[in-house]
Image 1 (cartoon, rainbow, N blue to C red):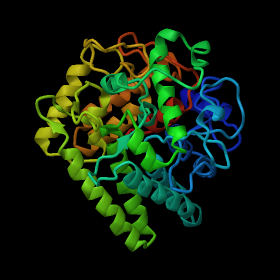
Image 2: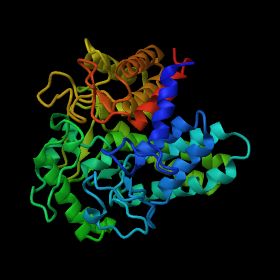
Image 3: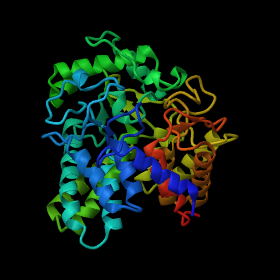
Image 4: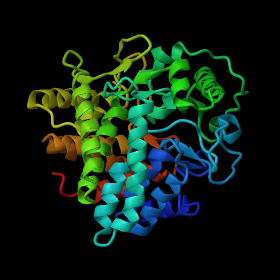
Length: 422
């Protein structure tokens, strides 16, 4: 028996708060959206009932308009800022007012397949929730029908502190109505976390949208940060493919046609963001109209949801290899050696097991199985050497951020069993 598998399961059990999992104790004491989707896929390998419960608890936070927020505050905690009093949302269970990458439908398909015969009754309400959320994405965050969905806050990307936001975020004022009371730096070294100035900008945006009553049309109008983001859009497309698959499985023909139309529009829109000179895909700043050329992992995530021409896939892989050269742990979230590269700071360089998981699936999809296997081994070795850290310094291999981390445990369970990759 693999002792690390046992340890991963123990971490998920320790972070269970009654049918939902916190990312890690104290630093993140609530239920996070995309964390829970990854965690549900981990549970699906050995406890489908608990995996369903994870997604069901997340959907308790779904808004009437279909949005699934990035945090559901099921129980109070004093160890995290900003809490419900800062968000000022109206949902019956306290939630944040922004969303996160829609991994949900990807998890739901995997869970439905793992659960086997008779799972439809439990899957269907979650399918309905996922469909409502996808409709929200396309209405609230792509009102012009471009096929690319926009983020109105860096936290919605999941890659909160990425160099991808530096230019767009610099336009956001640092003035806030809310006193910024950092709690994260009491749990984790400040050198690994976002800077105070950035935090004030993050909270300025929260204040702005709270003043809009969290109305999507008003937020769209008032937003001083608006980025059509390539990682989130690529995840939405993969989730859309899985949602379309479930719709056809359940004979929801009209749904399937609607979802397929979303997917086709998005597929074309992502392809239009390919930049051969950079050898990666780019996001677009909707306020300036400029490409976001920051060199981050987001530019490679379309591997997950596109069947790319060999020439493009080969160019992406060559660029990934160049970024990974001489690193102890791949894959870095910022290109090594550039000015914004900080290998220990949150989303500005570290390697993350869940990003690697998405990239591994994308590499396999596009025929680069040997590269996928190398990345799988790198991820497993990092975890087995350093433990279930939030993320890893790619240069030294050191585990950084929060420890005993749920999604790292889930990624390990998923990647460890995938001996079929090579």
